[in-house]
Amino acid sequence: MEPTVRPILDMNAYAARADAERPGSLLARRRANGGAASVLFYRNPIEMIRASGCWMEAADGTRYLDFYNNVPSVGHGHPRVVEAIARQVATLNIHTRYLNPVTEDYVDRLKAALPRALSNVVLVCSGSEANDLALRVAMTSTGGTGFIVTATAYHGNTWAVTNISPSSLKTGTLPPHVCTVPPPAPALVGEDVAAGFRAGVQEAIETLQARGHRPAALICDSIFSSDGVFADPAGFLAPAVEAIHAAGGLFIADEVQPGFARTGDAFWGFGRHGVIPDIVTMGKPMANGYPMAGLATHPDLLARFCQGVGYFNTFGGNPVAAAAGLAVLDALAEEALQDNARAVGAHVMTRLKALAASDPRLADVRGAGLFIGADLCRADDPTRPDPALTSTVINGLRARGVLIGAAGRYGHTLKIRPPLCLTRAEADLFVDALADTLAATSIPPSRPEPGG
Image 1 (cartoon, rainbow, N blue to C red):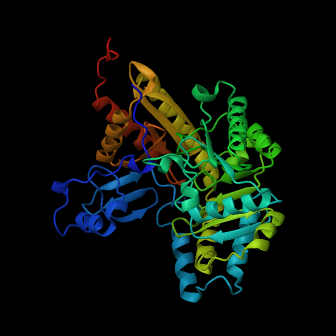
Image 2 (spheres, one colour):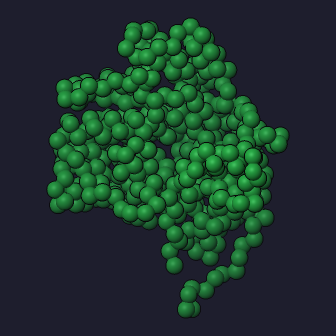
Image 3 (cartoon, rainbow, N blue to C red):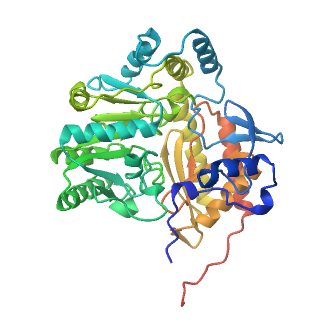
């Protein structure tokens, strides 16, 4: 029997329990205020009170090593970012229809890290806004209405972007203008990942055309994080980009998760694949937790869009956000965090693969830099995902002071993405805790197939 497909917000989510929601408690207040939209982690939610570097502290005094959160990518409470925000908000914080040098300084610094052709940048407040705008620019530029995404993709929360986020769906199906392709896993697309992924994109192009939708864009998170983290072989994206271009569509690189040095090999996830996107979207790590996101594209694409509709963003690109963004770029450069992501990430991968050699339940380890996926499967069949084990391991790690998330179609992949300032000693704490958790979770005897 195939495991149940798990929507992204159901992975490691708190399930309401009357016995846990004492009247007047913080949990009860959150649930009453947020209702059905109140999403919390863990069987017993955590009340956090402070954080620094790679560590978070709960109200009960427990310290947790953060292996989940890629928002404060240069470290929780980074002093350079904190000082920049405080200084700027005390000096000037305005909407975006006045001139200020801080914002232009930031955009110039950001553009220096991007392909030269992507010389126009629109700053917004969230990755959802950036991706929503990217879809609109793509439709205007190409005259198309169809979009291609991977089967478990997540691209944000607006109406348009939720429509291209299969992992958000709890019921129903994707609209006809959206077509999915398998993620770039050898088990799904064949050992020649580049050819197999391109074939999937070509088939999706033809499916959209048969439905009456001209392709507007292929949009990919270039580390394929929600699909379970698929990074290799470097370069496999290029043939798929060629296919969408040949069909008259664009390639949108969603760098909200892999961008800003996380993959170690390149500043952007797409950089590992030797491609230049038509549009790049970015968000979460941009300002280390201050709400900031953006879109970079060719001037002609943006001009064509703006001929038909005006666009502005009241808060996007405000000087406080820009000051925070500049501080992040400074920290990345001065602390050599891309090099650190590459070196410490390689150390984590080496140790995880050694652990996998001694425990068949750790079925596969893959990734780049400090973005790693580790599949947990049945001991007697490494091709059979074990989401129940994954949930047990996640909560076991929490009990050992490590926070981590899940990904993949069945929620059976540990999603490993700590702050980029992670040390080797902290990396070893994580792998040791994982080994201890697995050792404490006995391997069940082989289970016969139904009817066997």
